[in-house]
Image 1: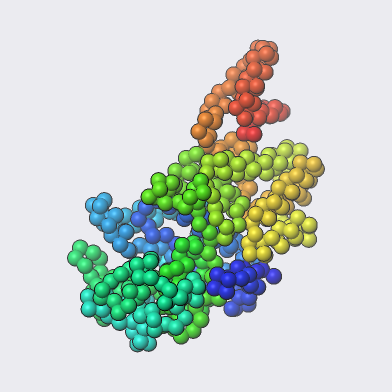
Image 2: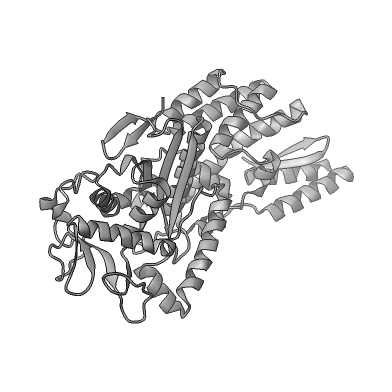
Length: 462
């Protein structure tokens, strides 16, 4: 049985869907005012892995990942760029889709945009007001009254009395309590607004997810996910809004992926260690980045550095090298189908059912590759490709992968490698075997392994 670490319960729990055979899952998506960064990559890949395994386990999954297309940062960036909010968000949604596709991330079943759900947000705010949990402040904003929701803090473990004003809480003299948060922002000059019972304005950030999730998945659903940085205050506030309005349990299992660190420091624009997905993919193959993310457990910190990416590339190359050798030996098209009775598959399943333990699942892949190196079995190749495919890995032609990865700093480029191989072929044709050997040695010193075969010379990075 699948067990999930539930952030709400602070323990692993057996996963029991609300509706047998079906899973409803909501994940907080991107605020589209800039390119996606490495932290976004982790959220995209982690929950893509989760939905893949849920489906592979025979469950019908409804996966929702939202897009925030209106907030303070979007408004400011559009103003700074002298373009409309629609133009800005459309551009970065397209960029997000390109990045996700490069990383092998499946599209969610629903990808709601906040601006399309304003009526649902207004209804939710109205219900909170009727339930005595929301009030309109003197300045026009509508706020949630935190102290009137007794369970506030149950996800993060924070006590209301221990929370300090100003500690990730906006201080506003118009609020009845500094801990209260905004549900509806009164209209400001030059900003987009919608009509409401409380005057023209726009939604606060937290109310978006409560409205979109309940509209698409119902008032009570199975899994809510996101980055650890969202646990407080965003997810805490979602619980307060949703349960305060609907008077029922909101989510059964809360999942949070760990922080991304760069050279053992938290990734931050202020520290200058901030990397976009696009910057990383200029140096590394997208599958290497996906493998790097999945090789760590989703709840653990992910420490990024070029050396870690280089190691991930070398490790992934070992898997593709095993497939390449087997393809050459077997010389038949292998049907990819997992035999779940086979020992490697059983270990893989056990790992994934233990709170999506992808490090152990990846270890199974390397054990399979070792077996393939010892015996070029089509059944083992099918197992390796099939199990890796459940993680979104090893779906490419091995030779294409082994040659396609961008060179890191100081590495020999593909163009230079191909030119040297051509020079070596010319030297061999004129029977200058000394020159041919020197070229092979030069490439080997640069970490390039040549393999001569009946169809010609192929290469891979060591």
